[in-house]
Image 1 (cartoon, rainbow, N blue to C red):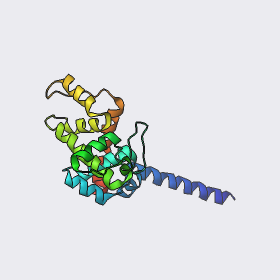
Image 2 (tube, rainbow, N blue to C red):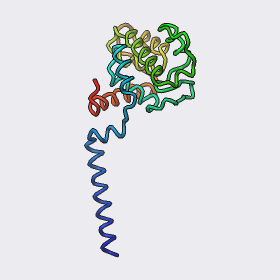
Image 3 (cartoon, one colour):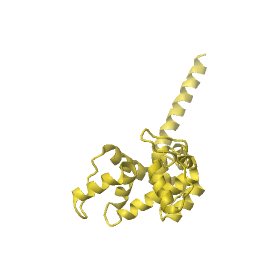
Length: 188
């Protein structure tokens, strides 16, 4: 009985050591388990179409919905890229999606297409600013009205202070996960 207990204890110590090693070194297979990548073909196609890195689109999806196409927020955002129905309607109107309905936002292909379009639009809108990507992500998370106000308060070309902690954390998370998608999956 003592011997079996000793083997069990040694096994648990070995397993714990392996766990510490994996978490500490974060090999690609471990990162791929923690940060899944679904809908890669759709992400690649729409990222390419709108001039975005696929790693950025994938990281926004991860941050927004964890790749759950049925995700709904308390604010009413829907799907993988958490689009508000009014925002999606505006995108449909601009891109010829005349038959758009809110239920379409649960479709991964349409949600990623509209989300990539909106993200690219925000990036173009703030492209003259040194913090263009962060401002685009802030607009995606907190709304472009807020970001426009922050940019105006900062002054032309000046660093923009993002007062919402949730938005600052969101931007940081997207950047961190984008780095992971680049390294673990080889996405650009």
